[in-house]
Image (cartoon, rainbow over all chains, first blue to last red):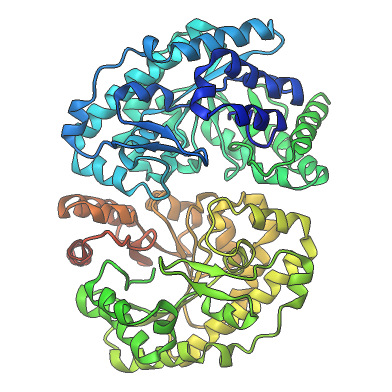
Length: 320
Length: 320
């Protein structure tokens, strides 16, 4: 997940001076924000400060980030004609600033910890384009995918190309691992995932520069995990709704897993955090191939000292 | 799920004259609304028109339904002291109008189809009391349950008594089956469900008048289903995120299942509806103990003729 955020005073101070898009687009400032959690929390990897939607800006759909921070798309994609009208995108020109951020972060890190880049998966990108922003029920997306099957597959095919180019650009600039975020795909049934999503997520992953580990993640995906593994990824990201040990067993130990603390636990005290972290490490049973992580992003109400406590607790417990 | 709703012109016409709470509280009007889907759609059971929160009104927390239809609680429960201050509730006095509705519906139905009543489960009721309304992340609820363990268990114990009394009142008045809605419990990890919820949901179900079937349902509960079965229920309700056949197998055929069409499919045409209904019936494989249903409520944007088409299609396909 993105590490820097409103729960950190350093980040809030940056956001007083910079709008969200403005911050993403300034490589020096974005690199500074990327490094904040590394300095403050002592995490084992840096996560690029960027956004999955940046790469959609050149599609001319009118991407904005509202004051509250949520994305808004002024001209959403609602028909086959809208899909056909989307212009070609030269990703390198469009998000060169992200690749520059990656280079700056790598230089500043000087190999202290690795840098993880990320992009949105085709379904999640399409859901923003169709809904026009965040959604709870994804009704327009679900209606579009059934009512406009050829246009749906054309759109996701385009987004798979864009997503892969975005990730390959990050890798070329120095990202040492990448995460494919299919954040909202958990709204689908397993059958719908296989028909409408799997081929396109697979298409992203097969286009990526080999030998860079790929993490594949979504929220509420318990029943989709075997299909997500089939779509690809060296690491499958798990949210807190699954039990780590039995889920890893079900997926097979030939794939690594990442997760899976409920970020809401960080609103409690160190005793609860320790207990919950221990349960996850017990589930992993010391097996290589488990990346400890939250099951989703840090809530902005979280006391930063609790996040720091988690990092310390995980380091302590996993060194035993 | 509640069958009557804004997708029906008959219901919208009623709501022009009545506020939501007003409608629930008038037994004659509420009975009329309960019967609308039976007449219009030809469903195999009537679902009581009521709300899970009605029974909380005597707690004095300031329950309102806003214009948009969402519940709002003006004085939410935020501390152990707030829990201790909640007054005793005489359920029979508080929601006598619901029981009267049940009686009126039974009389009007004259045994054409059975009537299903319902209540909220302790976790879902507590989440409304603590958050003050609907929520996406349930952060206050999750913080409360860890930070105030004794008060949490006291609160859920109280809510279990209230919920059971609400259901037993409906049964005494003539409800032929009841559904316990733990709508939002899918936000919890399996371990948290077992520690913070299971004993209280079990407590509701064990208090119910025997020999009336109990349906136990929540959304996004894939990994919680075995624990929900353990808490109780003759029928486990499934949302569309699970595959019905393999999930029933996993739960064991000693329990019945209800579900599980994604209500978003009803925004498509009859061809897609037929295909999706067939897949669910194939999953059930003609085994007795499957109640065909949606995986959650009907979206208000749904064309009513598509809901009618679904009922007809299920009747046709399952009579083969």
